[in-house]
Image (tube, rainbow, N blue to C red):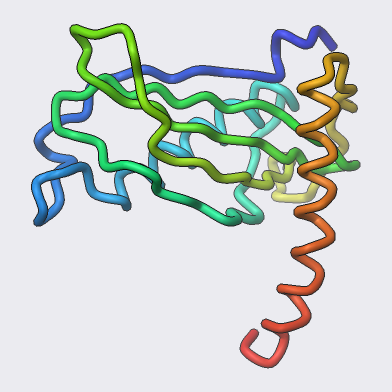
Length: 157
């Protein structure tokens, strides 16, 4: 599969309906946008409907102002048999200026499913650049860390 399909970018303006009580964009709105970008990337890569399996380590670095141009970059950083690990970075800033600041980062895992909701195999993604190799190693390290988190959470599931 052509590597161009492993990444997508969504761009839009933050609207007044996205405001929280502090006058900035609500974190829940940002999480919704991240999920939409992640889904779009996963569905585009797999050619299938995709469901969110895991969202990990979401970090909000800076607030987003109403009226900011928001850019969400989603890219495949690792594929399993049926899963796709996607790195998501959110940038925002005044649309009249070129520079945008990173506001949020997380990694999501999506599974490709068929019309009956059964997981299906996804195309293998192979890193080609030094950055892609580094991001794949990051995904694998996060997978190892999730094993410990899953073990800690067992009594509460």
